[in-house]
Length: 414
Image 1 (cartoon, rainbow, N blue to C red):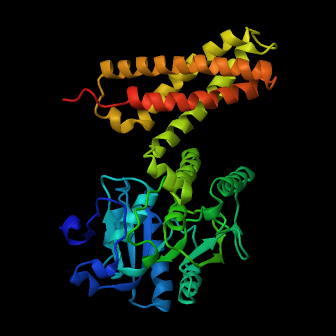
Image 2 (cartoon, rainbow, N blue to C red; image 1 turned 180 degrees about the vertical axis):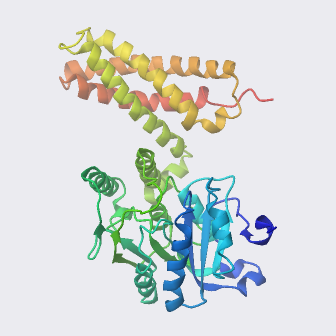
Image 3 (cartoon, rainbow, N blue to C red; image 1 turned 90 degrees about the vertical axis):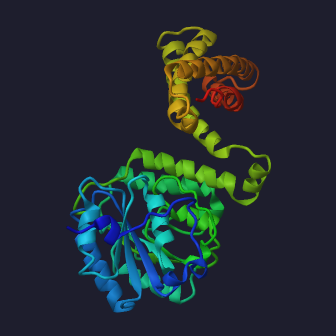
């Protein structure tokens, strides 16, 4: 019986998501360096993986025969994708396989693959053949012409999508526009910042701690890496023929989270937030939860106060709407924003204490919210919804800072 774990599988790197310089690795690894390392992150791709490896090997054997490696990083797929990949190694000697059992996520899978890679040039491609393998030749050629980073783009000459719906096109373009507003210095450098198909010189991202969110790593490479010259190659994004698409609404939320975090952690703004030791990652999550609470608050306020519905007095309706939003926000923050703290305080009595503290602090914030709402509505902007948004923004800062100091802190541990 084949011992997959010991004989064929790559060891999964641990620690920070940081790529090392090849000259700093052990001598046995230097003897086996290759020109190009291509990472193929997979999950539930059993039906695709053999065809993917075959086509990629055919393309690269023509361009750089024997001077490359394909690294499949599989997140322990229930369909046994990693086992199928391992069985292909005797036929494809440039293939290497990593099985991750304790980590999840496309972006971190790519970085773990790069950490184990032996190539001077690093790349990533999807494992579902939606990225055409032959485009690799153009990407590698651009690197040899002097580019630090080459991106396969759907939005440049020769690029496009095969059969996207109007909604998906709208979301893609909307995400790009939002990125240009939040992070123009990064997204303004490429036409397709959400591309998951690119190659980069290893030296551009060595000794840089990458901290991706969601499934798009290109933002991290451009935002944190030492990338000077960027080249783009057009390609047509094809619909997958096997398996199911993994694009969900959560990935769009992760994308927004990623943009905001990069905005606050890079450039002059990043230097400022680091100098004051502000927990920006938590604040972003808290803010996204608050955004959900805004919709809850607005919906309840409308149902209670609008003349066409119940028509309750504004202040009374606001108090009820605010309390419902508080309960909603607590559940999200407890499960996500402060999940690391909650792991150490999982008893129901501790959760109840957190809720009571959170509710009390937010009730104080609600009082502040109501005061600001009435002030703005009566003296500045006579529009209940705009006034409510301004009041929510003021109260959010109060709620985050005081809850950070009082509600979610480890004070009772065994």
